[in-house]
Each structure stands twice: as C-alpha cells, then as structure tokens.
Amino acid sequence: MQFSTIFACVSALAMTASASPVARETHISDFRLFGEHGCSAENEGVWTVLNTDLDKCTGFNGENVKSVYLTDINAGCKLWVYSDAECSHKKTRVHTGECSNSKHHEWKSWKLKC
Picture (spheres, rainbow, N blue to C red):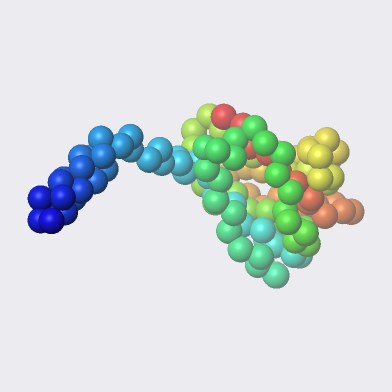
C-alpha cells in the first residue's frame, strides 16, 4: 500500500515538473476613462492593456466615456479612441500625459497598435 502511494506521489511530481510553463501576458499600456470632459470628473477607472489586446477593436463595455487620459504606453505603440463600437468613426490618437476629449459624442471603443 505504501509503495503505490509513494509511486503515485512521485509520478504526479514528475508530471508537474515536466509541464510547460504558463505564458505570461505582457503589460503594454494603461489609460484612465472619465464620464465628463477634462479628465477629472466621473473617473471610471483604469484600463490596462496587455499584449493579447493588441490590434483589436475593443468597446468600453457601455461606459459613458467623454475623455481619456493615457497614463503610460510602451515605446513604439499608439492608442486610438473612436466614436463608434466598430473602430471606424472619428479616430483620435491619445498621447501620453494628455487628456483626449470627445467633441459632440462619447468614445465607444479603442484600439492599440505597436
């Protein structure tokens, strides 16, 4: 009985040790959303962008976004916000350390490319 228990433990350890490592996602950028113009009122939180988010049109999940503040971004990468959910209207680039205000609409989606 002890032999089978020891064998099972050693086998489980060997299989775990030989398993491939889990791939980590890489941090690309952070930007903050606001429900009012000026990047100060109605702070809706920080959006963290990972390498798996690159080159994808991503919606703001129904948030009322009127301004965006780009906190940080990796070198060579660019963030755009759009007035529609399909990333095709009123494309506006957001620059690091600047507030990007919507004019007569809300931001509905974003895309980041490196």
